[in-house]
Image (cartoon, rainbow, N blue to C red; front, side):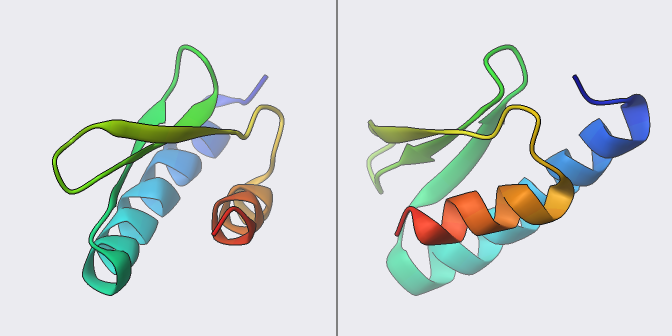
Amino acid sequence: MWNAKELEDIKEIVNHLNCAIKIALGISLKFDENTDEVIVLSESGKEVRRINVSDDSALGVIQDVINSF
């Protein structure tokens, strides 16, 4: 379980990763706080996969998302 600061950091990281990955690959990322997953969406908005980031640090979230590609 993350504290409030960690959760805000993770949301910000996913937002920044979303911008970079959208430019590079044309796909989007969305953080689902309820399931502790980052959702990968196709250009059409269809869910492609989910990346479990529960209990990850901010750096761990970056590593999990990048390694999933």
